[in-house]
Length: 577
Image 1: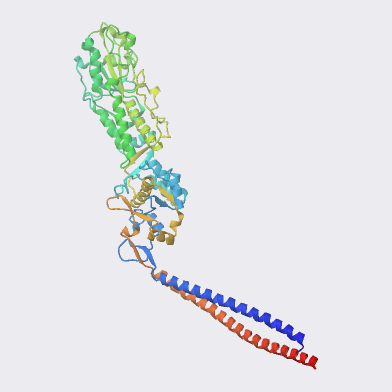
Image 2 (image 1 turned 30 degrees about the vertical axis):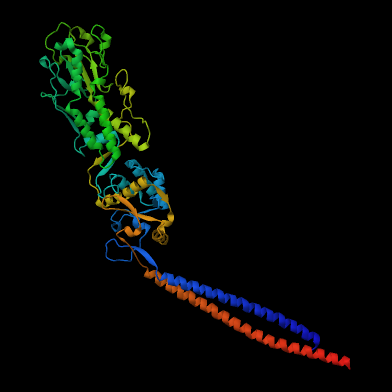
C-alpha cells in the first residue's frame, strides 16, 4: 500500500473510531437514564404498597367494594339513607358539580348563600334547573314540585312530611273546596251578639247578602256562608242603633262598632284561611299568615272607623255630615213612631251597601233625621276576607322577591274611609297569583324521600353558599382531596343538622388498603421493569458490538500506522545512500 493510500485509510479509521466511541458514550448515558427510570419505578411501586381507598359501608358489613363517590353522596338512594352527604371546602361552602351548580344559579342562589331559607317558589326553580342540567326528568320534577317543600329537613330534623301541595289560583281554590274534594269551607255565624240593647230588637245584629238586601240569619240569629259565597258575593253584618239612644247615639254607635270585632265569625275566618294556606314547615307562609291576621284585625278596630263623624258637637252636625259610607236609606215616614223593627232594613225601603268599603262603616238616615232612626254600623265580611288574602299575597310576594312593595295592597288610611277603589284586592281574574294549598291526596313514600333529599341539598346551598368544581365527579381526585384535607364532608347528624368534618368522622366511610390498586401497581411495575431490562439488554449488545468494532479499528489503526512508519524509514534510507 502506498504512503498516500495508507494515510487516507488512517484518517478513515480514526474518524470511524471516534464515531464508535461517541456512540458508546451515548449508549452509556442511556443506560444511566434507564437505571434512573428503574429506581423511580421501584420507588413508585414501594409507595403503592401503602395505597388506600375510601369505601362506603352503609350497612356496616365490612364491605370494601363500594368506593366513596360524588354520585353516591349526591344521588338519593338507600345507600345514603335518602340524606345527601355534602362535599364542602374549607370555608364550608357546598362543592357542586357543573350540573348542580347550573341548577343553583338558575334558582338565583348567590354563591355566598342566602343565610336563610326561601319559599317553595325558589325551591321549585332549583328543581327546574336540575331538569335543564339533566339531573332529573321533567316528569320527576313535576312530581317533586307537587310535594310540600320541607325547610326543616337537614335544618333540625330528618323527618320527611308526605303531604302534597298544589298551587291554585283563587278561582281554582274556590272550585276545589266547593267540589267537596277537601271538604266544605264554611263560616258559621252564631249570632252571639244578637241583641246589643234596645226595645223590640232594635239593636239586633244580622247577616245580610246581596248588597244588604236579604237577611240570611235564621230565627236564632245564626247563618252559614260557603267560601264561594264569601269571596264572590257581598255579605255584610248590619246593626241599627235604637231610637231610645237618640240623645247619646254617638257613643252608642261606637259601642256597637266595638262589639263587631268580637264576633266569633272573624276567628273562624282566620282559622279557615290558615288551614288552607298553612303549608307546614314553610316559615314564609307562617310569617304571611300572622301578617295577614294582624293587619286584618286592624281593619276591625272601631277606633279607625270610616266616616268617624261623631266627634262633632250635636249643634254642628249637619245632614251632609251624616251621609256615611252607605247610601242614604229611605225609611218610613217620620210620623210613624211605633215598632223600631227591622222593616226599615227591607230592600224595597232603600238601597245600601258596604261593597265599596273595607272595615267598619257608619251611616245615618238623612230621610228620617228628626227621630234619629236608622243610625247604625255595618261591615262587609266579604271585603274583609278579600283583604286577608290580599295581605297574605302582599307579604308572600315581598318575602319571595325581596321587594318593599307589591301590586297587592289594602287602603287603610283613606280620608273617605278604606275604599276598595283605592286598593288592589286579590281578584278572581288574577290567574297570575297562585296560593300553595295543602291537599291530602296521598303521596308515594319513595317520591317523598327523594323530594326530601333534594330539599336538603337546596337548604344547605342556601344556608352555606356554594362553589363549582366539576372535578369532584372524578373518584381519584375526590378521594385524594378528601384524604389530604383540601375538601371535607358535611353529614346530617342525629339532631337533624349538618356538620362539617374530615371523612373519618363519617360513620360509614372507611379508609382501607387498596388491594386492587396495589395489584395494578405491581403489574405495572413488572411490565415497565421488563421493558427497561429489554432496553438495557439492547444497549448492552450495541455497546458490545461497538467495543468489538473499536478494538478492530484500533488494531487496523496500529497496523496502518506501522506500515506508514516503515515506508517513511525506507525513504530516508534511500536518499541517505
